[in-house]
Length: 86
Image (cartoon, helix red, strand yellow):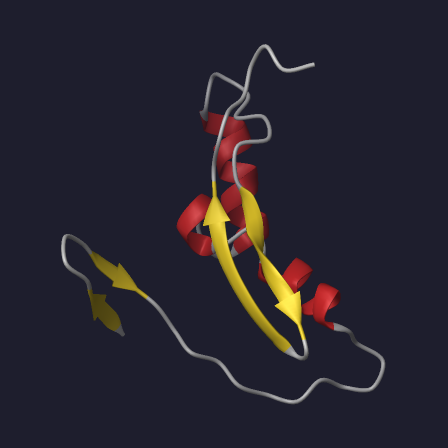
């Protein structure tokens, strides 16, 4: 679906489901990252292609950031670079 905001359009999906008893919300989040928007899909093949074709190391440049609690979560893929921090 496309969410139309004031200045941008953004692809989004609202998902619902039931966790198997042996899984927790952190396992679910881990399985959703990295997003296809970050590195492509299928993930393993896309990561291999990136490693084979890019001449630089992307390093740690994007990750899930958000709020978790009470079975709800608000998560975004965020990328930031900080330097000079101690």
